[in-house]
Amino acid sequence: MAEERDISELSFEEALKELERIVGRLESGEAALEEAIRLYERGDALRRRCADRLDAAQARIEAIRLDAEGRPAATQPFDAE
Image: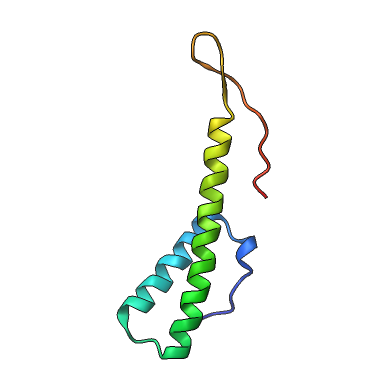
């Protein structure tokens, strides 16, 4: 695998793409045991990163305030980091 970037620097889309590549590699059964363990560990960290980003997005959506007619009136800032 090419040089791995710090997971905290990856966008949701980048983390998801890398996670998909890892899953494909693990499912192929071609990885040696040590590589499979390393891939699994990185994949788990990527999965957590994606879940955190999705939770942050959901919190931002839930922070939208509605006016009396049910239309979005404002949002509250949400710090996902």
